[in-house]
View 1 (tube, rainbow, N blue to C red):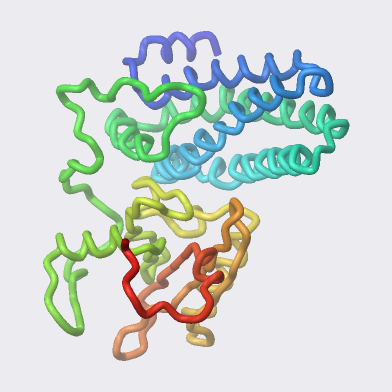
View 2: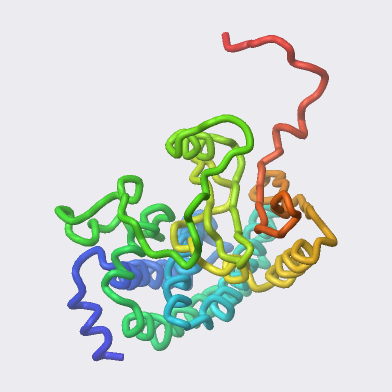
Length: 323
């Protein structure tokens, strides 16, 4: 472990792995402060520290959408399943504490907080002895550089944005990156339209501004596209492109997703829909089987939409009221 930490120390500033450790130091600091707080006597201090700790969600998302996909490309799939489940367990514990805070059940908080802190410490121990050392040995410098671009989109927990990596003179922001990369699916002829003519640039604008989360999974179960809207319901990053869809969902929901794909491929079903409460919003999630003119299965379109305001509509609105 000491030898590995020496290697981490030698990494250039902004390297994704180095950033994980800088982030980890801050998380450990907050955990230590939380353990020293008497929740019942100094609730405000607890509340402030707990809100800081909740930023760990960004770390979870970077791992799930960035680090894990690159590990899968090197045939290590364990973190995408086991560690993602661990993340979800911690998320549930954080939600339970939020519920207790909202219901003012402060006396119930100490044991829940202790359990959460133990879980986070255990997770970070596994990161230190298994996840990060193995990632360091498996991933190439090119992998780390590409990963950093997606990390920018998700953000960091408890730290300011790190310096660019690679160095600024070599850095290209994800929105400006035009480098063609080898992908595990066919891209020829993707821009075909039944009616009308749009340039690729116009298509990109349309998909960016449409108020829907769209994800396209091809007939080989590979994620080939997602739209980059300004207000996505669920986070996505470039790491999922080319990834098997079964690794893009929490383990507890993978079975349902695979069932949908199986029925779509058999032709027994064409749609599936759900609606959930998410961060005080009502989210409508739909899956559509994509088929060609010969009814051959060509993939699935996943669409998520925030319908909170739509549900509240009443009567009619037939006039423009901008003023």
